[in-house]
Amino acid sequence: MSSRTSSRQKQVILKNFLAVTDNVSESAATKFLQKYRWDLETAMNQYFENPQQLSKSKVSVSTISKIFEHYKDSTTQTITEDGFDKFVEDLAIQDDDIVQFVFAWECSCKKISVFTLEEFQQGFMRLQCDSVKNLKAKLPLLRKKIEQPKVFKEFYNWFFVYAKASEEKKGLSKDLAIALWEMLLVGKFKYLAEWITFLESHTRDISKDTWQQLLDFVSTVDEDPLLEKYDLTAAWPVLIDEFVDWMREKEIIPPLADTM
Image (cartoon, rainbow, N blue to C red; front, side):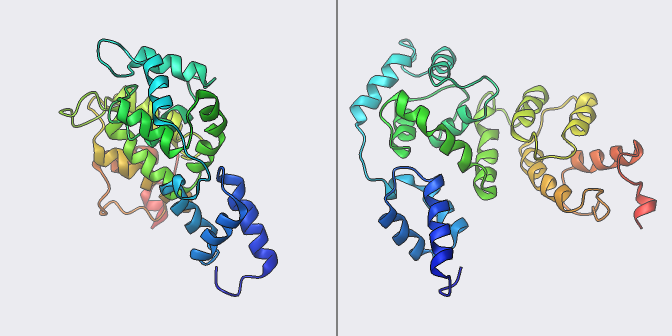
């Protein structure tokens, strides 16, 4: 937005900004929007990078530590799968709800379904919560956060490292990758069902390059649904090239000769 933004436009932008942020005063939000010249998308991206910058309240680290103690495994001194499942249950999150992993992303977790004390504290601090009840109230905000394309891409790319079985393993198992795509890309990828069918005959793990570039391919499909402009000489992963060829063979999209 430019400096010519009208008073009415500013009120609408302010209202929209307050609707997706949490515990932010109108005066603080106004100053923040002024800083970014009333560009709502830019301001929201900057806010979500560090929500604490506009928060009116502080939380207790010791209280967060007590919550961690409730869910941790005494043998590993971390929250492991059983504790994570109980945590998700107490938040009333369904098994297939992506928001459980958005919280793990806020914590910068490095291993699926595992939280260290430091990671757990980070997530609660970033969201300015010191109770499960307060965190539960923030879940709609977390869902809204990843509606921003730039934020979703960061979240999606983080997921690859998070979901790997170990640091030494270079790829994701195909079955796990499919399960994650069914959660992450439903409603976003026009050819998700076809992609999963195509992968039935694929036996190798999914590489980081394929994982990351699939999201770029999703954007390409949005802009060119029949892939008439798809360039086989571009730097797409081989697996995506093979998928496009497969769809042409199955007549899901026009064959190459018809697009010349």
